[in-house]
Amino acid sequence: MIEITDIHKRYGSVEAVRGVSFAVGPGEIVGLLGPNGAGKTTILKILTGYHYPDAGSARIAGENVTERPRHVKSHLGYLPENAPLYGELTVAEYLRFLAEARGVPREAITARCSDAAVACGVTEVLHRRIATLSKGYRQRTGLAQAMLHDPDILILDEPTSGLDPNQIVEMRRLIRSLGQEKTVILSSHILQEVEAVCDRVLILHQGRIAAAGTAEQISVEVAGGGRWRITLIVPGSTEETVPTLFSSLPGCTAVEEVRREPLGGRTRVSAEVALGDSGGQDPGEVIFDWACHQGYKLVEAAPVQRRLEELFTRLTGEAP
Ligand code: ATP
Image 1 (cartoon, rainbow, N blue to C red):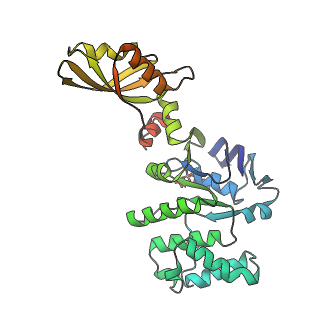
Image 2: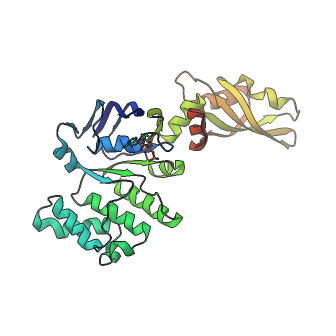
Image 3: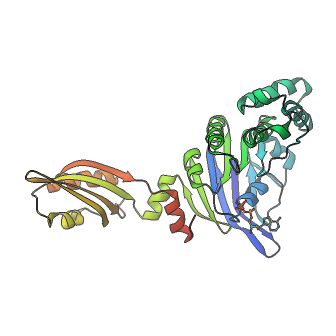
């Protein structure tokens, strides 16, 4: 659906995008995550045809964005970082005006405006002037304009920027519901946002992709095999049992946050364990087999999700 191959873009001496490639399939919600200046907006502008890449190609629905811009734009709805709104118009007038400008057939305009207004939750403000709306409603109106021609792809540049916490929650809910019907690519520098809204995350740093995948996959990639919270009941109560306990677990590279609780003649031991490469075997199975073999009672084995904040710092060497 969206295919970007080795895109480069330079503004004078600034290399904004340096060899970025990725693909987004139908129905996916993908987040471009990165700090200010990482190149997110530039990539979105290339996808929407606002900028041409210096090298590489961007294809939407099989067509090159620079070769068939009109055709490609018919598939896209774009909400730029600062939505272009006309404050003196009412929401209804604005949507109607843009539907006409986009070439929506005259007989379909009323229905399209109404559908977009319902989908974006602006029906109750349709007759208010845009200048008098709260930032949250202005952003919803911006989203409604992006949907007027019923595109199958939505490109949203920092859609929650400047919203208050309630409006952010509402906007995220809205994006998730739109994502059930449409392919969505959004940019954000809010880590929780992409984690909460997106199926997949591309972490951008200085114009390059530093990591890609689900938050969980990235976590495993960065941590090298992943971390597991393991709780066992082991025989005996000696202090020295605990430090050496996990050394026989295949692939174990670190043991942290050990907790120990005596249970009569036995000990309940809980720890966060880093596992290296398990040779393609499910780590949960490795842990289970190991515990059985050692004669330990396995109470819990659950992968530990690293927060994206932590991953970002590890990947880029910068605080998020
Ligand atoms: P932000 O989160 O601040 O919006 P971003 O990740 O979207 O950042 P871009 O806006 O793509 O990043 O900018 C990438 C780099 O390109 C930055 O160094 C920026 O200053 C520079 N840049 C962007 N647009 C232009 C322009 N029109 N002319 C010159 N430099 C630009």
